[in-house]
Image (cartoon, rainbow, N blue to C red; front, top):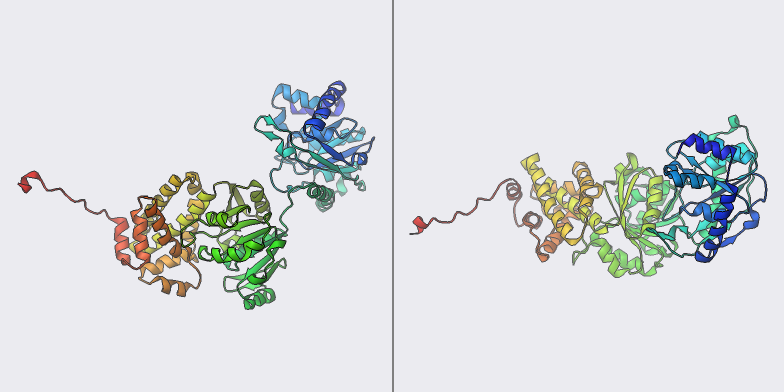
Length: 557
């Protein structure tokens, strides 16, 4: 339908009264009975005069559920795409909808809303700008605040919980819906030329705060406020800084009291992340003194070899509502479990997420990063993704936990393989990485991981970052392997755990156990164990072993 015509209709003619009350007479009893809708605070809505109703947005039914709380017609903004269907667009426009362009600031939408308020009607606006589900509420935009300041209309904050769960595909399920309506907020009317961005932001915060509070009181998911990170290495410290930048309080659990005192006094983790100032929201404590029960999430930023001890120390004191986030990129000894598999067996009931992607510590803080968050719990994914996005990093989410963790293993092992063959030139390094990578990806696909995960950020993206990063521990370990150094000498020289050196023998054993064809990975394990020299490894990945020729019949005769 023509967009200008829709705005003209809303401004000049408005709601089709007969159609509106007919629809309401059908929908209201349906909502009250089928959804068992509870409504609190209806007396806070003015019975006459202009009113701006603001609410969180979870479902396409929100305008109709909220509309049934008022005893007069209500107008609401809807994305322009909803009007593309001729009949559907005509129907919702007669029920009070008018279009908004969400891709840019829509002055025409605001002008229509101003005219509706000027004649004394109600306008419903969703400050988030779009449906947000699942997880905590999204970030509010300034449209409602600007409209209130220009028009002088009071703002009624409304929180709705439950509408996001009523639809599954085309099926509408009978799920409880709860609505709380707050007291009207009134702001001084200002002239358009006096409306500054800072003023609009301040009023937006004032409007959105009661909605967030009501949402949480109704049982809605709260945003992350307090996170514990076990492991004050480079990865754990970088994650702590990113979360603190998004106004999350972080408790950084360290090994000993000396490290705690240094971090809290100097505000810098010089051994692992030199030059990065720790924000005031980051507080270091001894791991033994960590109170995990007071945290929304506990992140284990420890090497895979240290995960069993760390989990055993903290999991028994964690409520089941506390999520677990894993940064380990390897296999857990001695059975070679993936980190999430290991945690699921020993911390049943907790939601678990794994972090992958090219997000090396120092680079993530200085120049940005790309995270891949994997979990079967969509709420946990969104709770963790929100502050990372607010910290201006790129975030993707997936339910392929196995794929992300296997991709983390594969990229470390492939980077080690490439660096160990680098003395043979770029061809040897590329051949080593490619052949090992192909074996692991094929095995992961057989186990149920999604192959597209390996082609994306968690796989190919992280592999490139690891190979190119000069400070990559896995790359440095491979270079030392190529010089004939033993694992003990490499670990002593680097001074930190190298996931790939721990992972290679475990991975080779798992591949053999599963009957997977992985001759290059098993040969790499022999190199790590010191059973072959680096020259043999380089020759192995760039030459073809001559096939044995069967003796001819004439020769045997």
